[in-house]
Image 1: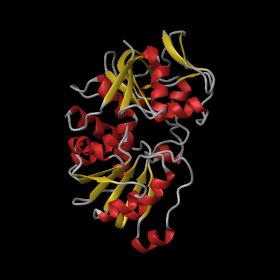
Image 2: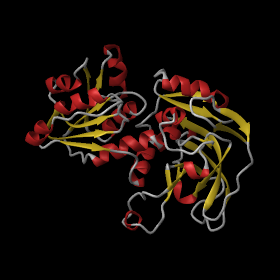
Image 3: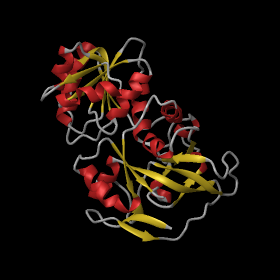
Length: 330
């Protein structure tokens, strides 16, 4: 099969022929049709991610199951599936026994990722893609969409609360749509006034144009009960904390470019919280997939042939992708 292999950091990825994998007990073999590109791919390229090289990356894959390993009974050949990051827990730790994500789970880094024509995955790591949802549109849901849904659910939104999204890019444009689809008043925060019409079309009830101090700009607009931050700017993350209302929650999903400074005195007086979030309960993935299948969440995609993986990575690293990039394997 063809696969994109990452052999060295800061070096071009190689499209090469590798042996076709075969599923073992509890595993499935997937014919990958699309795989999303993510900021994690840039971190891997830079050597900022703890993956052992050489490796086939790609953690937003979608396709069809073509072979079942022994013991797989809840999936069948022909099923349209995507694969989550954490595929199989140890089954014995407190987290597994409590139904929480396992800190020792096996991931795409153990079996190989989705930037290949065929991909091995644990059956427990696969999720069925709803009928009517195109495979290319489903791909970003398996990391970006999953992440923002988990972030919002872990903020425990209440009816009538206002959600503000900081960093309206690959994750943020999905966060605006998710919050709007759940019936929450949704503000988008941007530094570009010319994006106002586009963000309103995504579902934002209002757009806050901020310069160097997004927290003050949000506060001037009435503040927010929840801020979903997808930016990498530590300065902006620290600033936006001041835009929270009393008992507000700032949920961060971005990898900051430095230490984040939070005013602990202000947090104490207003009972505000700072939280982090990554893909969490599988129910969050199911929920965002259903929203996408109903057309309530529509990722904006740039689609490229698998052969252009290096070009796409470079565009992603330069901040030129609007909003998610997906590799087509056909």
